Image (tube, rainbow, N blue to C red; front, top):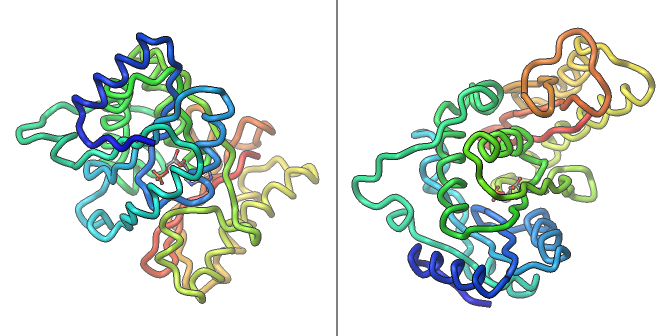
Length: 281
Ligand code: AMP
């Protein structure tokens, strides 16, 4: 496994691999890797391609009062996990390498990025689309794997790829969960035992909604009311949003859902830890 920190080195390597006929699969991450990330690596490997994992805590996708500085950066453990997972190349640039002094160009998706995460984290997707566009240009992947855990990110990146004519296939991986249902997340390591127990209500609310749909419920108001009611029972959990949206456009579904096409998306504070999760209904 080769570790690359410079943009120019990564670009010449990508050019060489492509010239030799290699297929490149990119898994973009912010590190603090868990089984969810590694499931994305496995999907990339199973496609028989060379796998590049990027590890970059992207400053432009964090708001001024968010956890950029305290975001976990266990690089040694991450590299060991990548090595064990059979990753070929880890690209882990510094912020100055990606955003040199005077950097001033950003990529903005102006529709899908607006609600949900975009409403509560205004500059978030501008940072995401910018860094992913740069990663696509630097790593030149044939395909890139993203987790359904970040449903809106998947929709925004999918749109960016179409709108900006990136020749990159977007592969979407299912959300990996702990045995008790909690969606795996790098931010879970911020949770105390008590907070973690209360955080379980988020996945429980999503499961309940899925069960209601399986039992024939279609009404958005009833599904949201039940999820909201469940979450409201936990003292430490404060809802940021509970929404049912179209899985491609992220527009709120009105009236009734169409099974398979709608997503219930939840964001909540568990004390000071912000978690998101979603379920396709
Ligand atoms: P992050 O490091 O949080 O930026 O995540 C990197 C990639 O891993 C994103 O495409 C996420 O959607 C994906 N990911 C994060 N958590 C999970 C999970 N529990 N299951 C599957 N994919 C995940």
